[in-house]
Length: 598
Image 1 (cartoon, rainbow, N blue to C red):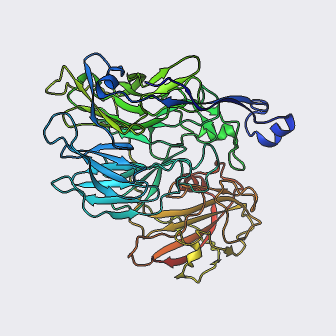
Image 2 (cartoon, one colour):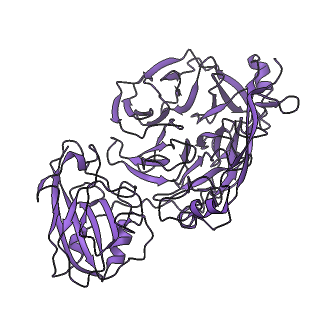
């Protein structure tokens, strides 16, 4: 073994974020003075790899629970990242740096993988999930599906999604098939902490298994590589990477209960509703408001540990771990002392997490003083059909197999979910278009940059520039105090109608909108107009994008005159919230309808 040394960079950086009271008043949108002069000390400390011992010496250095046997299942795999076990019980590993997927069979049952077989190849291949005889694979921008043959090989890859957000700092897409049969995809942020230009960044996305009808399931998730559904309840849980450069002990790595339409704070709120002093919310939104609408994590773990793949345990080999979650922690570079370099178990009792504790450790070794070395960097976790646990080390190219000396033949009864209620997945709404929900005798003549029942230009479509269309309308009755704009597609399969735009608190003096408004929740021009959340889960306008091959869909751009100046809603409200607030206030309405097909 070579001496343990510190990595190539070993320094402390002090970041003076806001240096004067005037800067505080101009920059900080939380409580004045709270972060008006924040000094943060951050560390860069990268442990160095230790010369690799043989298998026996390597596994003897790993600490595992009593009665647990750790063996090398495969080695020399270069870069095994995410792991998945097929319905037939075969282990697969994606290799991001190689750009492929390898099949790892153990034909002779000796506890060691046969020679790896490449079964798929695409640049940046990372996420993998099985659903019966289908396999789903994710690269940076693309999702593929393929048939799984009886011999375990994959058929031809069919690309079903080709426009996931660009990767940036976090390009590693992961995916899974939920209990609802839908495809869930993690799209990490492009940066450490910033305002994203693509609303699908820093989210969990949900789509049909054919890749269509993609929406934002949950947002404000910086980089949730590891997520899985709790056995029994079907609740979705995930571990999110905390923000760098907030200090050695901030931000915690977050265990989140991920629910539909919830926001989880990033980039402005971290941890247990703490304000990030580096970034400000969009115009008109305070840190307090952002925190009010953000869901806090349920548990936290040591900052900078870098949680990777996560899998709930539902096997027979370790009955005491039934219903617990296993998470690989790849390890820090931005903390002194280093953290991670381990596998942890999230202890769930009666369906609720109560603590996180190391499961496999010993991969991080301290030398003299501030020098550290590592045996491996853990990334993938999967549960075998017999209940064994596979763990991948993407740095050493090793996959470990954990087994129990006290192997149970049947799983014990799992009471972890006994008191847990499944998360309600909101059914796709079926309702009239907004225009038909309000009765009024007064009408408004509305014009757009396209003829009535005419083709909507590509520039206004999602596949084009995604620019909101120019709209104008006649001045409404004298009692008008504000306007609401709602764009609905009643021809969509689900939700029905599909909402493309919600704009409210538009001043009564405004009777025209230019093409291509920003997607900010609060607009500066028209002043103080607010935009809500459309049915993709993003704020502002989303252009027509009907399924390819559908006949032209009808897009209703509806204008409502209200007798109130404000709906008393925060920016980013849902269509339903806006419609509810409009009740008893609509005094005139009008619409223009356009057509679009792809």
